[in-house]
Each structure stands twice: as C-alpha cells, then as structure tokens.
Amino acid sequence: MRFLRRFLLSILVLGLLGTAGELILTDHTENFWQWTPLVLIGLLFIGLATGSVTGTRVILILFVVSGVVGTVLHWRGKMEFQAESNPKLSGWELFRKAAESKSPPALAPGVMIQLGLLGLAYQAAGKTRRFHET
Image 1 (cartoon, rainbow, N blue to C red):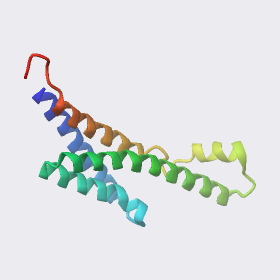
Image 2: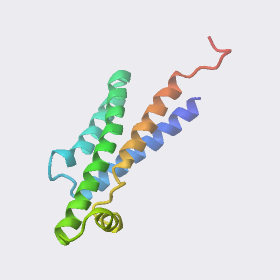
Image 3: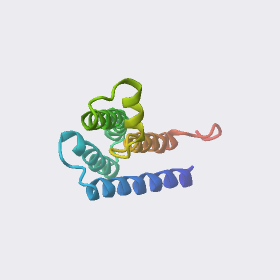
C-alpha cells in the first residue's frame, strides 16, 4: 500500500507541475477565473506539505469544481467567438463550429477534475487497511 500511495503522489505532483507550467507558459492569468487553477495548485502544494488532511481534501474537491466551471467557461468562450466571427450562425451550426474550433480547448479544464480525483484517491489509499491489520 505504501508503494501505491507514493506512486499516486508522484503522478499527482508531476501533473500539478505540468499543469502549472502550461498555464504560466500560455499566460493563463488575464482574470480571476484564469488565476483559479494556479492558486488551487499552490494551495494544494501547501496542504500536502503541511499534512492537513481536511484542508487538502477541501482543495481537491475545489479542483473538481473548478474543472467543471472551467469547462463551461471554455465552451462559452468558444461559442461567443464563433457567434462574433459569424453572426449568422445559431443553434446546431453554431455548436458544431464551436466544437470544431481549437481555441480555447474546451476539455482542457478537465485536467483539474483528473488531478482532484487523483489526489482524493491518494488520500483514500492512506486510509485503507487490510482486514488482518488492527
């Protein structure tokens, strides 16, 4: 079980560093919503370093929430951009054009959901005990 926890933590840390690096390199810092994942990543590193189980769990749940909110915001951005580019688009055609566009990547915020779930799995692996252990 110790190996599993270390493995999950290693994947989580690599994911956090990679995601933070990409957000910084792509200048994902224009407004409050764009700063949210970077702030959450920083808070999670603090939570992990201090060993605060409850605080870390709350932050991990916020990761999942931010991923859902980010996906909605990215989709809105795609739809608005397509509607501004061609005001004649509406309904299914607008949705299709937005889905085909590359920017902003609509599912990119899903990485926050994955990282949050991975972190929760890491925490859960620490609480699991075998039946013969007491």
